[in-house]
Amino acid sequence: MAKSEFDLYLQEEVKKQEGVAYPVKASLFERMLTKQLPCDKLHPNPQDEFTFPDIGPNYEIISNYEKSIMNNIRTRQPIFDDPIMVEKLHPHGYLILNGHHRWAAAKRLRISKIPVEIINLALESDIQKILENSQHDKRATFDMDEVVFRSEDAPFLEKKLGFPYSLKHKKRIRLGIPALFYTLSKNGYDIWLYSSNYESIDDVRDYFRCYGVHVDGIITGMAKDKKNTASRKAGVEKLIANKYSVTLHVDNDMILRTEKNTGEFQEFSLDPGENWSKEAVAVIGELEKKGIENANG
Image 1 (spheres, rainbow, N blue to C red):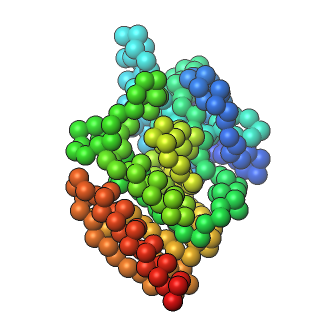
Image 2 (cartoon, one colour):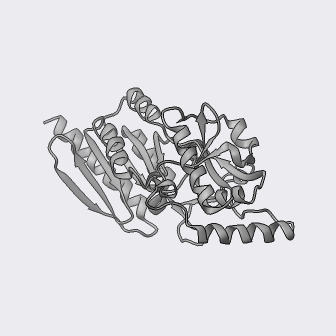
Image 3 (cartoon, helix red, strand yellow):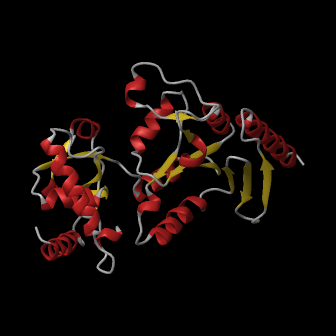
């Protein structure tokens, strides 16, 4: 498929989805069993700069992937090191979340099937349901990429999950995260996790269940939405923020507490080392104590 031919195909695919397709949840079995999909079942994402007429595909990158694919086929290796991340669509097919250039290379080479990972992202209806069902007016927010998850060689990690959970969940989390989540939930906070990466909300929620703690909201993949990231983030955040009178944003070196009605905020420093969670729990305890004292006059 020549460059101009692929450009035309790309724009036609985007138009076909307009006003027709929308994301839906894939079942657990579908996500577990579907490891490959035909290229024709994958649709380009209209919110990705890959499909923008003024930006479009980088054909040098596509060409490099084509060479890599052909070499992998000759040496009988998997055509990609990592699967293409997709989201299920109604009425049919899957939306590409990450991996457009690899998909394009396979498509141009007329590869029949390619490796995929089906991701369930949080839909607006999911967020609304969480907010409607919540009995709390306080929330705590965490950046999963910068605060919660850690690299394997990082210091101060929670103990690895035991078998069989370790087969599915290989990531590591910061020491004290489960205890901190437990303390927040016990004191009436909803816990919201954010990630710029594409993480399936089912997997994240199940991961923390293995540690015996609950998370309320999980929002992932926001930074990848190039076309309307700002407006989408603002809309989602407004929907969530309107529910809560108090927000705790827990970071590596501080907790920021804000009140919706007054706009007032307080900062509490944290040591990012081994006592990070201990200090965070202490801050929450002091805040709850002051809240009770103020309520009692």
